[in-house]
Image 1 (cartoon, rainbow, N blue to C red):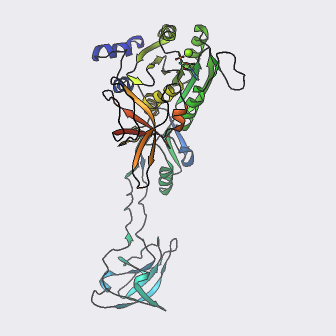
Image 2: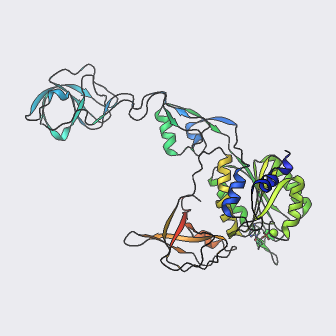
Image 3: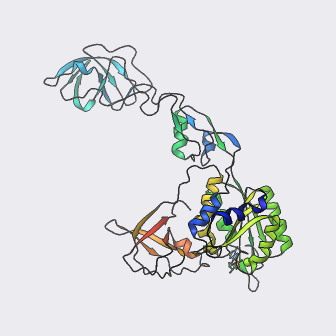
Length: 424
Ligand code: AMP
Ligand code: MG
C-alpha cells in the first residue's frame, strides 16, 4: 500500500465516521494507528538523562541495600539473648557506623553499638533502639518486648541483583536519576529526542518587535507552541510566520518535513483557507482534514508529509492549546518512545459555576480548581470561553471536560476536570 492511500483507506474501510463531526476519541484512535516511535538510541550520563525516555530496561547489578543494615540508632543484638520477662545486660564489643562496619562476629551475650545505615554484624539479628536501653560504660541493659528482626533492613529488600529496576519507555524523572545512581550506573540508553518543527500561517500575523499595521495581530501561537514543546523536552525548530501564499507554504512544509519528525502549524485549516492548504498537502503527502466534534478547536488536520507527522492546528489561540493537549501531546509522547502514555490527571469535582453547553460536542472549558476552607475541591469556570481568548488558558489550572451529550451545567453538578497545573 503506498503512503498516498494509507490514512484515507484505513479510515474508510474500517470506520463508520463523519469527517465533519469526528468524535474526539475517534480522532485520537485514528492518529494513534499511524504513530511509530523513534528507535535511535543514545547513551547519556545519568544527569543528562533527566526528562528522556529509557530505551532499555535498567537491571540492578547489585543488591540494594548491599548489606543487612540498621534502620535506627541503637544496638545490634542476638534476639535469643533477650528475655521477655526480665532485663538482660549485654557487653558492648564495638560499634558499626554508616561506612565504618564492626569487624568480627557478635557472640552470645554481646551487643554492638550501631547507627542508622550501619552494617549489621554477622551473628546479630535484631536492632534495639537506643531509646529503649540503658547503656553504661561497655554494658547495655535491655528489657522485654522486642521482635526478632526488628529495625533491620535486609540486603536486597529494595532491589535484588538481576531484577529490573526501571522499564523501557519510562521517563526519567529526578527519582529515576537517583535510583540509577543508587545502582552505581553512570550511563543509560535513551531514545533520541523527537524533533518538532512549527510555524504560524496567516497574512495578518506580525512578529513581536514590529509595529502592528491595520488589521494585523501579533503572532502568539508560536509562543504557546514553543512553550508547550519546550516543557516536553523536545528538540524544536521554530520556522517563524509563513504567509498565506501557496508557494511559500509549500516551501515551508517541504523544509519542515525534511528536518523534523513532526510538523505543527497553526491557522489555515478552517473552511475556506483549508481548501488550498488541503490541495497543497495532498500533493506533498497525505493529510486528512477533520472537523472535530469539540469546542474549542473544531478544525484539525492530521497526516504525513513524507516521513514526518503533520498536525494542522486551528488558528485561534485557545483552540491551539486545547487541541495540543487533547491530541498532539499524546501523539508526541508515543512517538518519543514513552510507554505507557500517562494521560493528564483527571477526576470529578463539583462545579460552582453555571456553564452554557449545547449537546453534540465535547467541550473543554477552562477552569480554576480550588479548595475551600474545609479543604473541599471545587471548580469554577474562567470568564469568557471564546476560542480566541488566550486569557482563559492563562487563568486556568484545569480543563472542565463536558462530554458530547451533556447540556447546561447548574451549580453543584459534578464535572470532570483535567489538571494542567504543573503539567503545561
Ligand atoms: P485561521 O484558522 O487561520 O482562519 O485563524 C483563525 C483565527 O485565529 C483568526 O482570527 C486568526 O487571526 C487567529 N490566528 C491565527 N494564527 C494566529 C497566531 N499565530 N497568533 C494569534 N492568532 C492567530
Ligand atoms: Mg489564517
